[in-house]
Image (cartoon, rainbow, N blue to C red; front, side):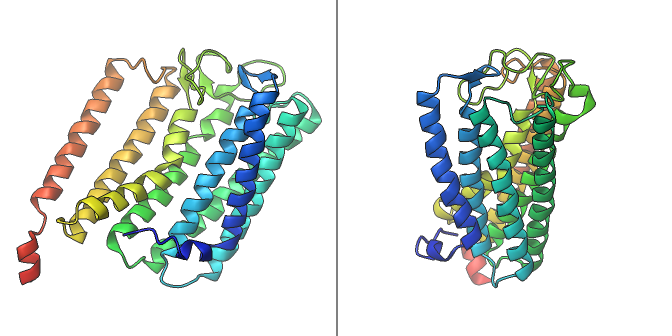
Length: 308
């Protein structure tokens, strides 16, 4: 399983248009971080547009590559992708526009305009979720010929949906901080904008729902990268074994996403896990190592595969 750079010029055009626009926005936001001294909820005001632009670049490139693996084009997928691009642009227009106005884009209900913009973002995300789900279903039905790539793409698409769902608690009533004009929060047990990790800003004093959200979303890149590495550096393993290793990694990745969200909901900082969290992590490591060992023990030896 390899990435053919020549074929990249023929990847899905709407998605590559999205990637181009988001790349330009990322550069603009990066400049904004350097020249605009305004700070909002404890972070440079242009940091959120920058992070979201980079995230959409990764999302667009990865999804376009995944679709290039399909044995034939799908009109349903093309329509779903067009919807994804449209709602992604809508979300970024709101995020960039609110940053330019000096306003938060998320959980902002301080005025009718801000409430309407946040509601529009919420609707756009729901539509994106459904369109992404449609793409995932069609990709599974069409069955990518390469078994390892098929496992990586299927798990990546599915777990990225789990990552989207991990953000839902941010807007639930239990996350209402009781502050006028604010209708949700990333942090649990502490107020948004407090001490956080560099760049990502994840809370170091309380739980942070963005962690599970982030990890889940980027399964879209992590599992295909694993599949590519296995195909490149584990050629002695047969295709079935490599595919099974991807399945083990995908299952572990999904459990990790849930575990991180569970930790955050308990108001616990990522780097200060309690005994219960450590036990859960240890159990996940042991289960993953055991499953990996079983897969490798059942692998077909090269000479047997040739004889078959």
